[in-house]
Image 1 (cartoon, helix red, strand yellow):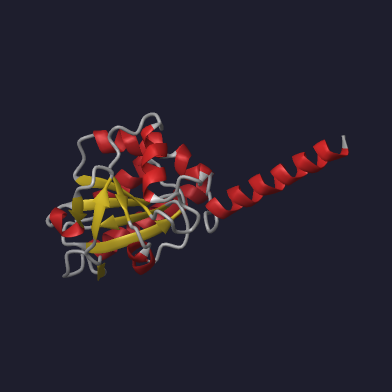
Image 2: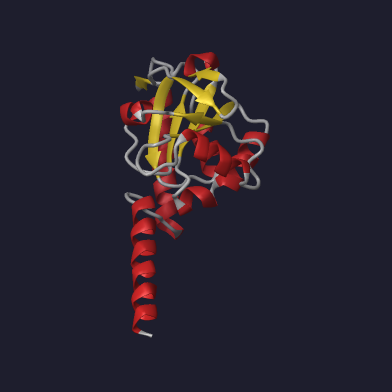
Length: 196
C-alpha cells in the first residue's frame, strides 16, 4: 500500500512539473481583463501599422529546414506572404491540445501561411525518426506542415523560450510579434488582420 501511495505521489509531482513547464510564462486572462488586454493589443498593432515602414520591427531571419517528407523549406520561399509559425513539442500537453486547432487553421483559406516547428533532440524532444513515427500516428494532423529545427538554432535566434510559442511574420518578412503560450485560431486571425 505504501509503494502504491509513493508511486501515485511521484506521478502527481511529475505531471505537475510537466504542466508547469509547458505553461511557463503563460498568463490566461478572462472577462474584462482579457477584453481590455485584447483592445490594448489591437490599438498597439494599429499604431505600429500606420508608421512609414510596412511592419516596423526586426526582420525575421531566414531559415532552411526539412519537412516531414524531406523537402527543404525556406522562410524566403514565402516572400510577399504573411507567415504564422508555431513552435511546439511532442511532450507538451498544451501543444498537443492545440494540434486539432492548427490542423483546422492550416486547412482553411487564410491570407497567411501556417507552419509548425519542432526541434528534434533539443529540450527533451524526440529525435527526427522517432518524431516522424510518433507523428504519423497522431489523429487530426493531415494538414499540418511540420519543419525540423534540427539544432534548435532558429528558435533560439527568434527568442523562443518555451512551448508553445507563436511567431507572426508580415509579408515583408518582418517578425511582428513573438508570443509565448497557446493562441487559439480566432486570436491568430485577429492579429494577422493588422499585419501587412
